[in-house]
Amino acid sequence: MHNRKRQQGLTFISWLVILIVLGFIMLIVLKITPVYLEHYAVKTSLESLKNEPLISRKPITEIRKMLTHRLSINEIHGLSKDSIILRRTGGITTVTVKYEQ
Image 1 (cartoon, rainbow, N blue to C red):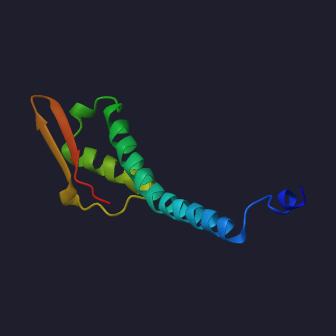
Image 2 (spheres, rainbow, N blue to C red):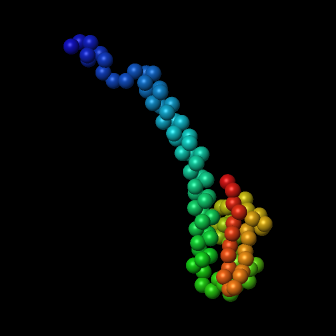
Image 3 (spheres, one colour):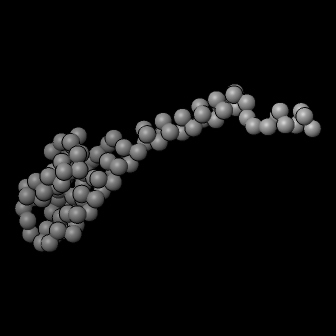
């Protein structure tokens, strides 16, 4: 009965292994989270253009200006003007963003 009481709990090495594994998981989460947040910011900026009234009647330059303004509000600054492609065919405006994190 005396030995059983002394053997309760985890050893120092067990705690160390658990802390190392948890630290590794936290490191991965901290590295991946900003990538997903930026993707979500670009996606919501594009979706907000879709909900803009009379977007198909606005000039392409104004649509590009609106999108770059929305992206800068969301702290997305790595996009050049060449990475935002706007096409208008048959009254339908297509906006494509080439974005890589």
